[in-house]
Image (cartoon, rainbow, N blue to C red):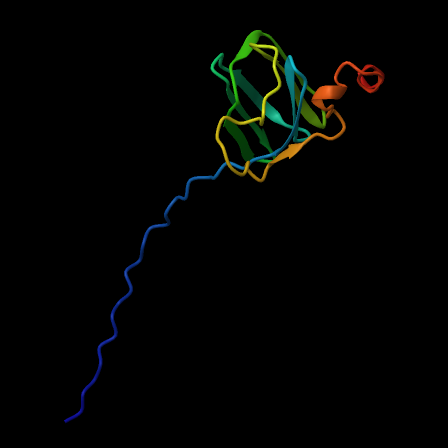
Length: 141
């Protein structure tokens, strides 16, 4: 007796549309007692949208070369959205975020632990807490 194995027909599946994942641009940050600097390094962006909320939510989205870039972070403490500013340049987006209270934050994000990989310290703007009123600070800015 000879046994034959029937080949199963493969079902043709429709092409699943995978949702486009958003990407995260590199974000550099530095602080002073009264403000936080965020520099989003993303050259030649389109459709830039920034949203700040007094509780400390920072939302950013933009497109570049057909890809969507987004950032949604909760800052360490409350902010003053009326006095905060942003500037969209050719190479980057710079945000100057005014703190609601003049004090140094222990970190940028409310969430404890390791910060996201896209978040870096901006050593070009960084000033230590005890150096803020010194000559080095005045020469830099």
